Figure 1 (tube, one colour):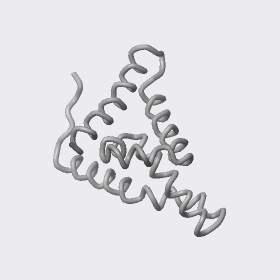
Figure 2 (cartoon, rainbow, N blue to C red):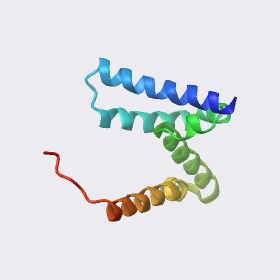
Figure 3 (cartoon, one colour):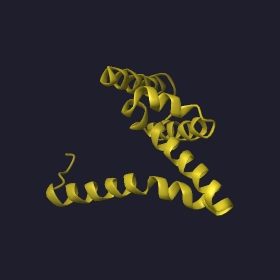
Figure 4 (spheres, rainbow, N blue to C red):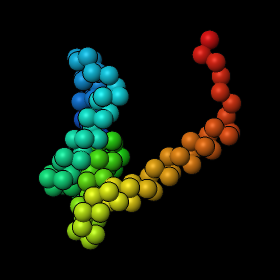
Length: 118
């Protein structure tokens, strides 16, 4: 049942993005930024965590989940370190995911050879 909930919630998030691409003049980059900002806002308001508790990876893997992670890290760091935590919190919270993305990108770049589009 957990897999079904994750699939449905993640699918709904993707469907919203596809509708925005098809029905608006927003570029994919702006839609992605919108997802991150929405995750930050919903996470800061405490509204995103119940969705993560319900759907698991279906809500935490998309970009809105990354925004929620940044908001959660910021709130925890501000409570611990004060105003300085607003600068260090998001970087500390997102460091593992960003590092993994960079390392996997490097590995793929070393293994595969790029091809021309033509």
